[in-house]
Picture (cartoon, rainbow, N blue to C red):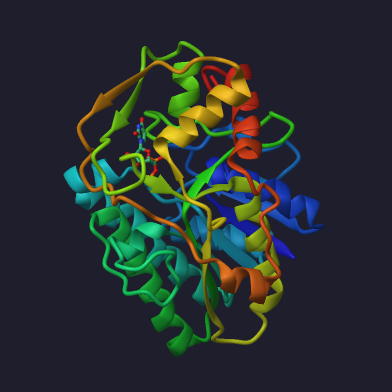
Length: 328
Ligand code: UDP
């Protein structure tokens, strides 16, 4: 299949491009390079720099490359920024997704895979989280993803769009060969920040709160390797044949780790001590998020190959220790 990967030069998108090639399909990348990195995509993969909402441009790419299915990773992801600048988030994450979908439908491209997030659930009462739990985002970032999910449901019914939504828990890790990896600026995610502190690239790792109702007082999260996320997307390709198919999957390992456990795992993998500093809670952090990914396991035959956090951190350590400035 010819797969258009929108946001294919970003962190999750670029890992997905590689897995698409490994699975014998043909990826085509479209990325604005606002946050993506040209070096994250191999030079032999068709690459189009531009905006996903530029309809004549996207139309031309869909036609020229005979695209069968579109995967969309091109969202803004900084929760704090979504709170301070919601217009930016609704414009990029919702309005531009709407434009992309409109172009696709006009061109009769009706298979779509959407990157969503555990943030659509907000602070659920039950753990682990199944797909049917009430969606109640607590920040504009999560709300923009939920708005797109609702749009997809309407388009499936009105126009026969077939789609799969993947709600990621904590995406992490990097390519096993150490050649592509996570490079956000600023970096807000835990594992890269712990590694940066271990490498001496940051004075300390700030631990945001140790007074949560959890066993060690720090937040619990479900960390899942980016290549495992990518493999779930590819397993969904075959399930989108019937018009109007609507699929929703959580992706996580089902084993939560605390912030302190992640620090210990980085120390074990790297052999280095991580200097830490306890600071107040970060606004909007729920105490625990853990996936029930039974549906992905049963329906897609998905099984995370990285099933311990140490195995994930080994890949992250390899990337960050050899690329202390990311792609720069
Ligand atoms: N965290 C932290 N220090 C950091 C970054 C994150 O203590 O420098 C904590 C954060 O409060 C949360 C967990 O680590 O409890 C995971 O945060 P991350 O930003 O990686 O992912 P999120 O769960 O917010 O999507």
